[in-house]
Length: 141
Ligand SMILES: Nc1nc2c(ncn2[C@@H]2O[C@H](COP(=O)(O)OP(=O)(O)OP(=O)(O)O)[C@@H](O)[C@H]2O)c(=O)[nH]1
Ligand SMILES: [Mg+2]
Image (cartoon, rainbow, N blue to C red; front, top):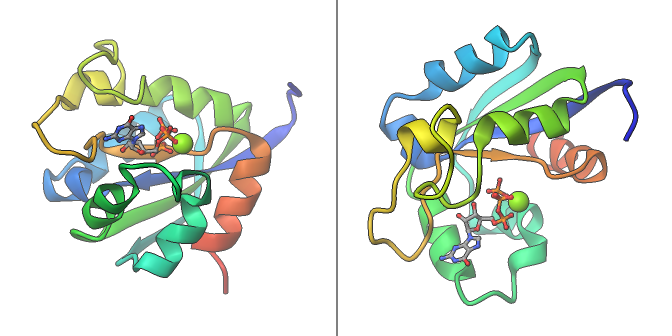
């Protein structure tokens, strides 16, 4: 763990965009003191998602995860700050929104909806290596 300025990839997933939570997510990032340095709306296709979620391709939920991520536009955000990778994961909360603590994005706005794919509003890179890789995918020129 270093304390240098770093960047992370945040995605407001289709459920977050549909529920008009994009502004809420951006506000929490900014109020925490992180800086938004890139922002775009993307309709992800399967090829993009296979790159993004390559670690999950063999998982039984992968098809449902892709269907969910293709179900509407995604807002991709590049965020900068000291230890922002860890910091945003902390703002997001646990993967499962039922278990995520109140005060986190997933804990305050998410719940289980009975769907195969867990709808949990946001994605945040899980390491600075993942962040570099994922930013290259979503913000490639
Ligand atoms: N149905 C189901 N979906 C899962 C499971 N594990 C992960 N997922 C889905 O796959 C996504 C990626 O999983 P992970 O990378 O392990 O979780 P995460 O890092 O908290 O979530 P992301 O920020 O989206 O990468 C999750 O956000 C869920 O939508 C699972 O056990 N069952
Ligand atoms: Mg992940």
